[in-house]
Length: 362
Image (tube, rainbow, N blue to C red; front, side, top):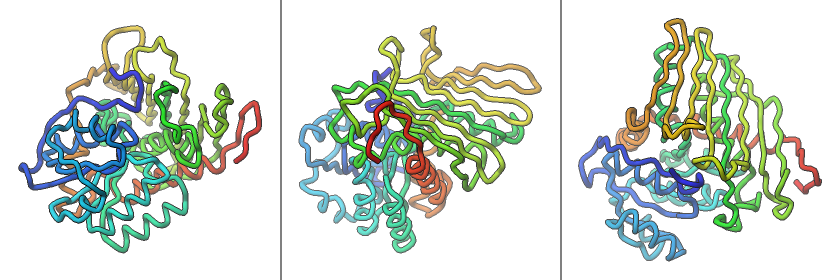
């Protein structure tokens, strides 16, 4: 199990939906380790990884250690000019992800961004306009749902009516800071957007998905730098309350206070309350045991059930995304959902009360 979320990439669960060479992809922008999980997922769905580009040769070599078959592009333009490439996956600095996506879509290719896919409402407006104008996809890797087996299974249970109508979703997103391993941009809000955008967009995605909502409003939100005054542009805590257009409520908390004694990088959990039952996910650990990740608990009128799902469910999102790009459908995730999740995260960040002990500039 990875010590920090920045290098966490689930083991591959191959489920190819295309033949070799039928769907060619590339990676541009290696600032966040999530790009490894993004590419693993695509390859597992049958995609062919052809190119990688990043201005940092050290990052490129580390990427090639994981994917030795990939070719190193001399420039971004070499990738974008290749007519074989259908989709570009990228995990650039968050504030630069939208600009990369605009270039990718202008080149006639679909774009697959790490979360958060952008950091400002102005970028969101530009991305929406580019999608409408080019007809290309701006897909998002909300990994805490699409690349976690308990999260996938929870969605399936909800669709089957296992807990009735969803009334509330609570998401907890603690992460280990591992400060010495973090690049400078990680502590600069202009670059990462803030905790409710960076981590919180994961949680908003889950609230919308599990409630079946098309939208929501931010009721209140808070951010703070409680314990890292040496990085005044950094949020080490944030939370928010939402009300969805289905009438359900959502609450999420994000923080960088995972203690060193925890067996993994964060005790990520989700609680979904329905009219006929509830679901708890213990995504990355069942603390106090060595049972590993992937625990889901379901309680409804039929009783109590504990599912240990590690290696049992897989990640259908990637195959669905590949087929969506080929068939121009929206099975994996609608474009509106991808954008609405980050829009709400941005609004929560912008509207947040700052609880920091020392006042900070906004």
